[in-house]
Length: 300
Image 1 (cartoon, rainbow, N blue to C red):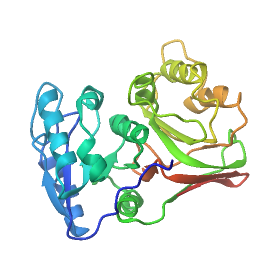
Image 2 (image 1 turned 90 degrees about the vertical axis):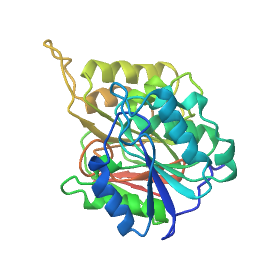
Image 3 (image 1 turned 90 degrees about the horizontal axis):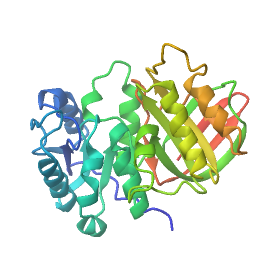
Image 4 (image 1 turned 180 degrees about the vertical axis):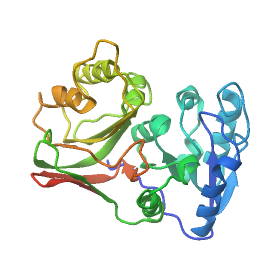
């Protein structure tokens, strides 16, 4: 069954900004609040904004309570996660989605929020992988914000990547799944792991050692998660690190090392991930991936 899409937003509706992971201040999301108001939305800040417990936006109980409140509030039509970092996986098992199931709403974010994107997909709901409020002010981020607006308000989504020597041409159709590779690895074997079978998988990551990338891709391969893919979309692998003795391959070359064992089309260099141009995609929505000699396109 196709994952359910929550109703698209309309001007005048209320949206909440919460922080399920790293701490953040009101000042850091003021531009986002102004932008969302400019889109005709009423913005509610959760109690996790300005809260602090070690590196987190309040302790686990506070962040869980805040997120649960927004899930249950009939007047909140979308939940925007303020930033990533680390901490979302500590909350998800104790969240109650029964009220959400009666009143689905958009949940949006990326990076650490991959946990929620995947958890919702497993439950049968679509969600948005897109820019978070802390990053609304990035230079040259106009296309990024426009794509988030399209995702929230019901516009068509399409992103393109130039030709890449590692691309494998072909066309694939299927529901979109994926997100941050490190988080997909973290939730393997848990109640938040969604199946990739018959789906188009997209991957991105930030600030990882190259051998970590290899280890995580090896795990996805050995656990059978790559075997049934319809296609693979490769986004940003930013600020990769290496050891004193070099690993010997780039992140894209590591991905190719595993992807070449399968026959699905693969497109590299998509504007998805930890760069100023981070175009929104809808996890769980049917998508088409086209990879040709001239480049790649992902459309939803």
